[in-house]
Image 1 (spheres, one colour):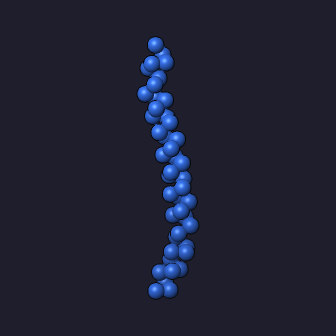
Image 2 (image 1 turned 60 degrees about the vertical axis):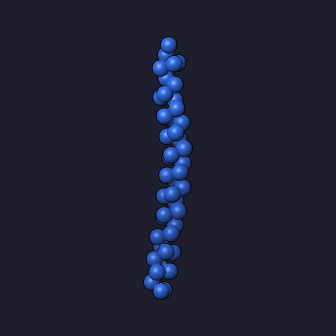
Image 3 (image 1 turned 180 degrees about the horizontal axis):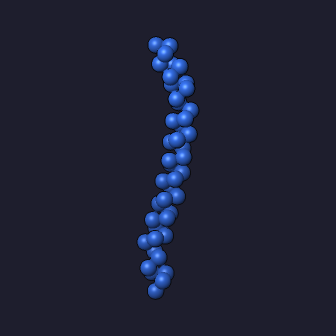
Length: 44
């Protein structure tokens, strides 16, 4: 059982950072997609 706790302590922080960064990237990609969809209307 102690082995599992040590594993979670060692791997938990990198997983949390990865999930946070993925969330931020997803949010920014949504804005990029909207901008690309609106681009033809702005060109006209």
